[in-house]
Amino acid sequence: MNISHGYRILHIAETDSTNAEARRLITNGESGDRLLLWTDYQLAGKGQAGNHWESERGKNLLFTLCLQPSELLPQDQFLLSEITSLAVCTALNEIVQGFTIKWPNDIYYENKKVCGILIEHILTSSKILQSFIGIGINVNQKNFLSDATNPVSIAQIIGKTIERRMVLDTFLHQFHDYRELLLSGQTATIEQTYRKWLFRKDGMHTYRDKDGEFHARIMNIGHDGQLILEDSIQQVRCYAFKEVEFVL
Image: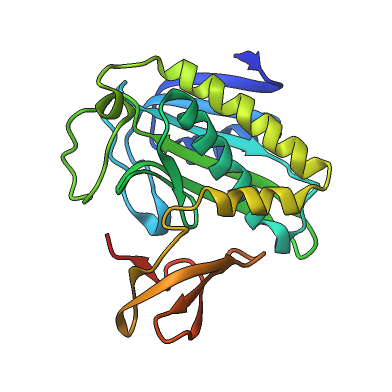
C-alpha cells in the first residue's frame, strides 16, 4: 500500500468487484476513509442498475474510492457524484480534449462511453456514514465483446496505449481539488462547473421516457440530481435517474 494525494492506495490483481472487496476490507478493520482499491480484473464488475461492466484483464482502470464524507448530509449526496464526475472528466481532458459528463455520471467522448461510475452509500437519516465510489475507465482496451452499444477507450481515441497509474494519479489530483471546493462550501461553483461540462448541454436533442421519444433541451440539474428538461412545446419535465434516457 502506498500514499498519493492523501489516499492510501492498494492494488490487487483480481477480485469480484472493487466495491465488494472494499466493503470486505472495511468490515475486517481497514479504515473506510481515503482508501483507494484498484485491480487489474473484475470477475463480476457492476455498472448502474446492476449492469455488467466489461473489462479486459490488465487493460483498464478499475477502482473504488472509499470515503466517510462527514461534510455531506444525505440530501446533498449528489454533490459527491458531481465532484467525482468532474474529477474524471477534467483528468481525461488533460490527456485529450473532448470529454463531457452524460447525466448523471457517465463520461463520454463524442457519443461514446469511456467511463462509468457507481456510487453506493451507507446512510442514516442524518448523515452519510460511508461511501464507495466505484469507477471503471476504458484505458487501453481495443476490442469490446459485450452488447454495450457505444464503448470507447482512451487508447482508441489517441491511437496509443498509456499508463493506467498515470490516469489514476491524475484523477486523484483532480478529485482532491474538487473535494476541497466541497469542504470549503463552494457548492455553487461545483454545480455550475458540472453543468458546464454536461453532454448535450446546448440545443434540442432526442430523449425517451415511459411514454416514448420527445425532443427537449437541458434547462438545469436539480440539487438532488434530477434532470430538468424543457421540451419542444415548452413543457418542463423533471426526471430522476433511470426515468429517462438519451437517444444516441
